[in-house]
Image: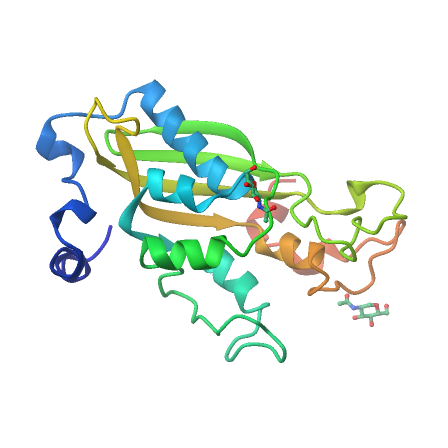
Length: 223
Ligand SMILES: *[C@@H]1O[C@H](CO)[C@@H](O)[C@H](O)[C@H]1NC(C)=O
Ligand SMILES: *[C@@H]1O[C@H](CO)[C@@H](O)[C@H](O)[C@H]1NC(C)=O
């Protein structure tokens, strides 16, 4: 949940229309069809991005929180952007995007990525989506993406979960529920591998890591 201070600042800065009233105030809740529409709206922002789509489905003061995305932005660096990075460093734990304009500037520069919805759940005002991208890096030069690569299977799939808080926008609207806040986490380790940033040591076809030395005790206790 967003802090009251942040919400208050947004209202003063952008006006009440920027953030429609929470759903409870209107006595309405998401139904299955509306939740699926919100889930597919989010999918479109990742897999078929346009500024027009972002403006249609996001609140103007949308906030996006994702340490997974920040880890990609920072290429896993703990402090300071890596040399040559086109993007400024973002500290873990901060908002990834704090407005529609920031979302457009960030997401607009990204390639479209295959985004398969695996599950959709919803509460009155939140939509929860579990997703998978079988080939998250479309750039040539990434593992599995070279023109002469035998198949794309060398690229590691990325699986994630996102919680979308919505704001009611009116049943007569083309978008009855706008995305107001995004909490998104996914396997950025696999994605950094696909980008060629992370090169795990000792990966061979037959090689096996010493799992017992690395697995948390609660896994080992199961057998
Ligand atoms: C992403 O897909 C949209 C919709 O098909 C398209 O308009 C846009 O140009 C694509 N973006 C990139 C970077 O290819
Ligand atoms: C890779 O293998 C070498 C030789 O067995 C070992 O010393 C090293 O610790 C391994 N590295 C990792 C990250 O597992």
